[in-house]
Length: 597
Image (cartoon, rainbow, N blue to C red):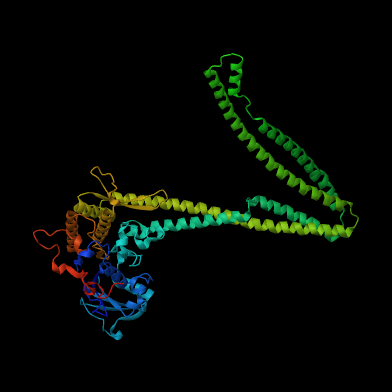
C-alpha cells in the first residue's frame, strides 16, 4: 500500500532511500548563488518519482532516462520495498539491462537489503514482464480498483510536474477518453460499467455507420430498394427463359414479332417523346439566354441631368436622387431574376444532357433491332439472340450483387437503429446515476468533493467545487473549479500554481475517501510548494501533515528556496521528516552521485 524503501545494487552511487509511513520530504538545497535563478538543477528530486514508478513496473520507454543513457545505467539493479495491506512487505527487483525480467520476495520486516540475496532465496525469479505485473497486482490486492489493473490510476499518486497540467487527465491518458474516463468515474463512486458500455455502443455505432457509408459508395447511387430489385430480377429471368426457349427451338418468329412490337410501341414512341422534349427544352434555353442578355438598365441620370440643363429646365437634386433609388431598386430585382434564370438554365442543360444520352442509346438499339428484323440469316439471328442472352445474364448477376449490397445496407440500418436506441438508453441511465450520486450526501463522490473543498479552503481560504456532469454526447465531464464569494466559478484555477493545488487536493481527497478500502495509501507530489505564497505554503504543509496522521503516506519534493520563512526560528521540517537531502555542491549532492546526464 505504501513504498517503504528504494535502493540499488550500487549504494555508493545510489544510496538507499528509506520512506516513513507518514510524511517524507525530499529537500534540494541550492547552496551556490549562481544556481538560484535556474529553472532546473538536475539534482534528482523529480527522478526519484520516476524510479519509484520503475519499481512499480512502468513499461519500457526509450525516452526514460535509464534507457536513454543505457551506457551509464546498464549495470544498475533497483529494489523497491512495498508495504502491503496486511502489514507484510514485498520487494521488487528489476535491473536496467533486463528490465522485462522481474523478481519478487515477500517478507515481514521493513527496510531490508536484498541486493546480494542469491536467486534461490527469491520467491519468484526473472518473471516475464506481463506476468510480473499480474503477480504484483495480486500481491498489492488493490481490490477497490477492480476490474482495472493497479497501474491504471498510479499516475494520480505519482504526480510529476507534467501531471499537474490537468486535475483529471494525466499525461499517460493522452489517448481516447474511453481509456480513462470510466476508471476515473469508478474511483469517484459512479457506475463505470454504464460508461464503458456507452463508449462500446458508441464505437459499434460509428463502425456500423462507416460500413453503411461504404456500402452506399459501392452501390454508387443505384437502386437501394430491395423490392424493386427483386421485381427487376423476376422480369429479367423471365426474359432469359423466353430467349433460351427460342434458341433451343431455333425459331425466331416470335422474337421477330416481339421486337417489331417493342420497336413500334416502345422505342419509336419513346424517341418521338424525347425529341419533342428536346425541342421544348432547346426553345426554353434560347428564351432564358435572351432574357439574361436583355436584363440591363439603360437609363443614365447624369446624362438626363445634362440634357435638362441644356434646355434650361431645372433638374433638382432630389429628383436625381429619386431616379438613382429607382435604379437601385430595379437592379436588386434584376439581380434576383438573373439568379433564377441562371439556375433555370443549368437545370435545362442538365436535362438536355440526359435526354440526348437516352436518345443516343435508343437510336443504337433501334438500329440493331431493324438490322435483326431485316436479316434473313438464321445463324446471324441466333448469334444476335445469344448475345442478348449473355447481356441479360450479366444484368441478372449485377442485380443480384446489388441486392446483396442492399440487403447488407438494410441490415446495417437496422443495427444502427438498435445501437442508437441502446446508446440513448445508456445515456439516460448514466444521467440518472450521476444525478443520484450528486444528490446523495453520503455517496463516495459527495465525500470526495467535501474533502476536496476542505483542503483548498484551508490552504487559500477560497471554496472549490468538484463536479461531474453529463455532456450532450452522453459522456462525463469532470471539473475542478475555484469559487468566488457568490459561488460563481472563477478563472483563478487556470494559473499553474492553483492548478497544482487542485491536483494535490484531488489526490488527497480521493485517498482519504478510500481509507477503508483496499486502495493505495500514498501520494508522491513533485515540487509541491512552487509558486505559492508563504502563508499558503504553511497551510498546505499543515494539511499534508494532518492527512499523514490519518494513515496516508506523503512523499513531497521541494527546493529550499520554496520554503516559507521559519516561525520563531523553528525549522519548517523536523530532521526526521527529511528522508533525502540533495544539494548542488558537487556530485555527492545528487540522487545519483555521478556527473549529470
